[in-house]
Length: 502
Image (cartoon, rainbow, N blue to C red; front, side):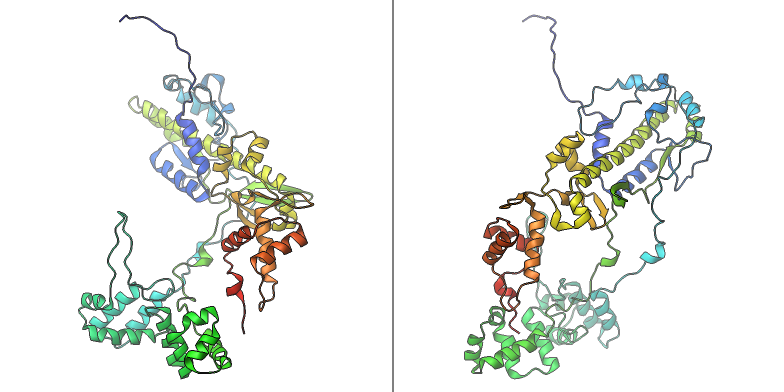
């Protein structure tokens, strides 16, 4: 054993705090970015925004690039955060701490103010337009229970039943899976009655009354009971009631002969009865929802607009605070020697955050412009003209890594004349054509949907027939199992279940 000196040369990637912050912000969508900004505003006293603390007109805009600083103040401040490249080693934190923040703020106050808005879009609608709430099935049933002549125990039992309804409006007493992998035991109507201190015999009577509330058929335990309650209330005949009680599986398979033999009636009578049964509601909660779909709005990160013969990409900064450094507060705090180090660190964090947000904005616009350029036919003509494209195509064009393109396009939405789409929507695998260039898989899905929409409902197209039509009419070569997969993705039933008998 001996002691000696040795030189060793190695390369490694250092994830600086600035780079980590830039990558993290790049993955956030518009709403998540707002939350991140609000969090930073609460924890950084020198960081301010134009919404809660409007900036005086004679002050500079603190979100400008680092080139606004004098050379002697650029130490630790002028490196550009690039989320897709290997960044050179930063200067030591000790060097960055030596920045003369008082001189920095003095120079910033002398700079000309930049506009606080990039303009482009109308103001957001007033909040009064978003304060409506649709009535849920539970609220509708509770209102009827409160206006009934139920006793206190019966009303408590009814509330337990309403609390166990599924999204169809049926009573679901099955157990649920716990986070540790175990499952809760299944419940019964007697268990609910016991919890409400109600006689189990009275529980059945209360449930029957609830099943006749509006909408009729709610609070039933299965589809058969739901249809039976409605048919009984609406005065259906014995044949229709028997089909509901014993032959729903044959109705689903359209096996009219089996039903006719069992009930000893003509097949024509079975078909007429099936027509009447089809008028009943299989989902009593269809017209109710726990979520107001009208209030679920996707906030696009960018807008694609047509300007004469070219397409323009504009970022959506409405509702997003414009950040700047509160220079007055920072100057006062820097006069305190004990707070100087703390404020210096907060000033650096504020500068890093402002630059990272700006870099995020530029990166999203740059990637979107590349997508628009490659998918120009889509924006002009529609989904049928969507071209095959992968992450590598965009990465090579903009000079970024594929992982960066993936981060930029995840949970980011673009507003186009064709609608609002996630940026990932434009990346599709290629499907071969016989004579023309390859087509995107999304365009193939839409072609399948068009064929099914226009098919003869009494003689629907099979998957193999769709394969042959696609190849003959559009030159698309695709396997039958691929058609089945795309059909399931689109939520379209098989041909045997799409057939319209009457």
